[in-house]
Length: 219
Ligand code: C5P
Image 1 (cartoon, rainbow, N blue to C red):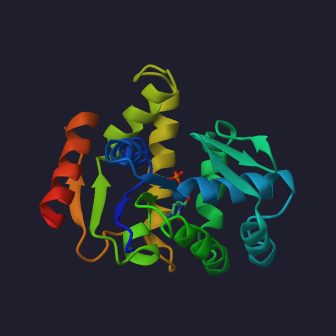
Image 2 (cartoon, protein in one colour):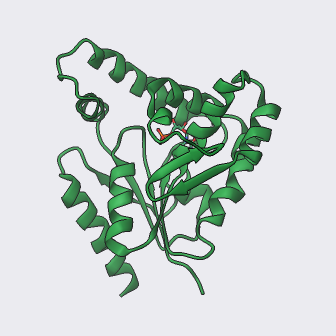
C-alpha cells in the first residue's frame, strides 16, 4: 500500500508542530515531529559532554539513540524528556548539530521508517525537500519573525513587552539564518510546495486550509 504523506516545513516557531499535530489528529494519521529527533540528539550530546563540533560522535549518537514516541510523550533512554527538549538552549544546540551531514544521514532512515506502515503528517525543515519528496502535499508554513517571537513569548507565559522578547526575537533571527544558510538541506520551500503565511490566520483556519488542499489534490 502506498502511504499518504503531508509534509509541513517552515522556520522556527512558525507553529508547524501545533498545526501538523492537529492535521494528523483530524485525518487520523501518524505524526512525526522531526525537530524532536534533532533536539533529542542535542540533549543526549549535552548530557554526554559531546561537543557540537564532533560530527562523528554526534552521528553515532543519532544512529543509536534509544527513542520512543508514545501517546504524545517522548522518551530517551526510557526517561520522559517531552518538556526537557523544548528548552531554548536545546533548540540552539539542535540547530548547530543539524548542520553536520553525517548527523542528517543518520536520522534520515529513522524518519523514513515513520511512513512505512501508516499515513503520515511530518513537520520540520526538509521533510518535503529531502526526507519525503514523494509526499502528496507539501506545505511551507511561515509567519513574520516578529509574529513568531510574539507567539513564543506567549507560549512561555510571558508578556509581549517583557525583557525576554528581544532575546527570543534575536534567537529566532539567528536560528533562521543558520537553518537557511547551511550547505546541507537548507531551509527553503520544497519543489512544488504550497506556501502558507499564517501571520494573520488562526490555528483553526490554518489546519482547515491544509486539509482542504489535501482533499482537492486527491479527489
Ligand atoms: O523544529 P525545532 O525547533 O524543534 O527544530 C530544532 C532544530 O533542529 C532546528 O533549529 C533545525 O536546525 C533542526 N531541524 C532540522 N531539520 C528538521 C527539523 C529540525 O535541521 N527536519
